[in-house]
Length: 290
Image (cartoon, rainbow, N blue to C red; front, side, top):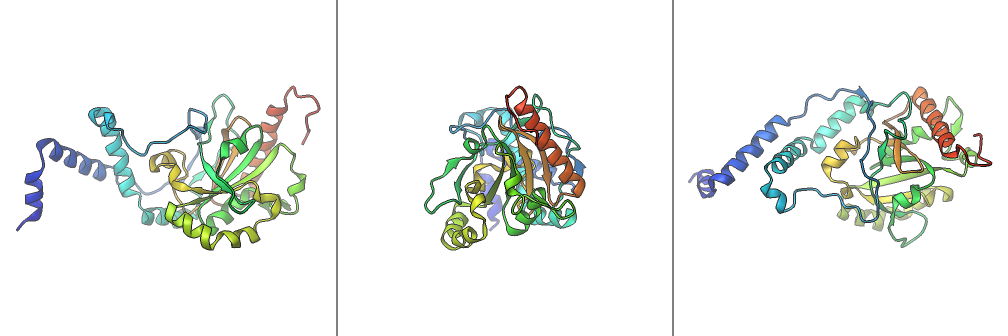
C-alpha cells in the first residue's frame, strides 16, 4: 500500500496547496555558502525592551487567514528548516566563528536599534530569581557578551582582554573601568531541559570559576526566549561562536562583533565605549574624562 498516496488523498485541496507551498519555500531557502561580510547597518529591534515584551515564534490563529503573513511565515520556516545545527557547525569551522566583519565605528544614537528583552538568572546567589536584563543595562554603558558554550565564551572574552594591549578587564584591569561602564555576560542555554540539567550539575562549578565582582552581571538565560528568526535578524543565531555588543544607556546596540576580535577590533570597540560615554556625559556636571 502506498501510504503517501493515501495521506495525500485525505488532504483537502487547500491543505495540499499549503504543503506544496511550504515545500517550495524550503527548497528556495536552501542557504548559500556563508560569506563573511562587513556589518554596516545597525543591528537590533525598532522598539525598546520592556518586562511585558513577548516575541512570537509563529502566527496567531487570526494570521492564518492573512496570505501575506502566512507566506512570510512559510519563508521563515524554510530558513529554519535548512539552517540546522550541522549547518551552523560547518559555518563556524569555515569562519573560525568570525561570521561578519564588525563596523569600523559605532552606530549613531539616532540610527541605532534596541537590544532585545531577555530574562535571566544572575550568578550572584543561590536560588536567585530571574530578572529583566534590560533593567540591569539601563543608565549604564555595557559590553554585553553572548555565548552558549566554553569556546564561544573564550571568543567573546577577546572583547574584554587583549594581550598585545596588556589589558584584561576580566581580571587585573576591572577596577579601572568607570562606574558607568559595565561588563555583562549572558550564557544562553538551548532549552528548558538543558537549563534544568545545567542548574543541577554545572551551576556550582561555574560559580567557583567566575570572580565575585562579575557574578552580579553574569546571567543564565533560556535561548528560546528569542525565536529563531529573531536571532537570525540579530545576527546571533549560530550557537557555536560568541558575540560582543556595545549597548548604551538607552538600551541601543551601538557596535557588534563576532568570534575573536583582532587588536584593531578591540581598539575600535573601546574607542566606541569612550565615544558613547562622552555622549552620555555631555552636559553632565563633573563627568569623567576616561
